[in-house]
Length: 307
Ligand SMILES: Cc1cc2nc3c(=O)[nH]c(=O)nc-3n(C[C@H](O)[C@H](O)[C@H](O)COP(=O)(O)O)c2cc1C
Ligand SMILES: Nc1ncnc2c1ncn2[C@@H]1O[C@H](COP(=O)(O)OP(=O)(O)O)[C@@H](O)[C@H]1O
Image (cartoon, rainbow, N blue to C red):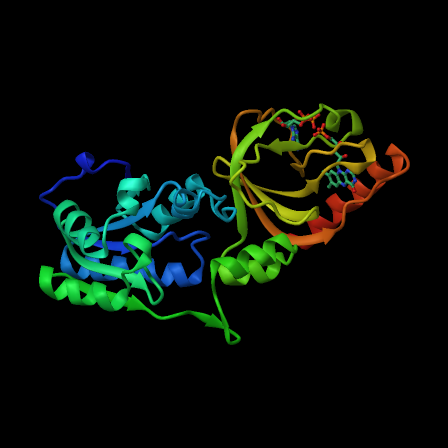
């Protein structure tokens, strides 16, 4: 998959099918949309393109913080690539884009820049200044400009609509198994291993701490059974999300003891896949009790994660 950020990187002679949306989480509803895009593109000899914003439109429009991300940009790229998307266009959302009318968005971006023949959107897709454009308008403009619009209806599980906001709530509440059903894969964070306090080795349980991006969602504090992907290998582990209350720390960390592993992985990117929340964090009165509990956690995770 090729990723571009500017329209001058686009080959104007290529005809495309384009999926529009924010796609935070790339949950099973988004996956249906993307696989529809790819099928239609393959059938019509078009390049499949996901057009989305690198920054969150809400932050520019309201000046307030956008909702925390389920999938950061690196994770999004990995998933879209694995689904078979050929081009990811990560446009920067700015004030000029914000004031484009729905009609101008279609003409300037979809038609003139992307040379689009097919557009795939979700049922509730809104676009253009003040979100005035909807699927109906997009279909009308498709007739005028010669592209076809496919609308994806909501995906539900047990009568519940699959959506990014619900997934965010699940993850914030530690309901990882529910989040994973909606996501159609384990909830994952892809980030860089950074230095912690150097305590882990002394306790006999070294932990790989990952960088927490300020825009990223953090699961509920506690201990989780996780799979860890490092390069192309998968390991089992126990991940602690929290403030290490035993040591009176107050900043939150996400740190993982990786089972049967003994390598220096500082500065490497790893993917943590959250499978099950095992327990709350505890403030222990002494370090020996913490070590006993970490041993128990590693055993529990190991049993729970039997492949
Ligand atoms: C499986 C696991 C469970 C943990 N549980 C707790 C806990 O309940 N309470 C706590 O204060 N710290 C807990 N920790 C965090 C340890 O305090 C932490 O690993 C240690 O302080 C090392 O920090 P460092 O990576 O900054 O060196 C846990 C860590 C792991 C890997
Ligand atoms: N089994 C393991 N699990 C996690 N990290 C490990 C393991 N073995 C070696 N390491 C390395 O040790 C580092 C963690 O050591 P630790 O003493 O906890 O230091 P820090 O506080 O800097 O995280 C990891 O970032 C990684 O490079």
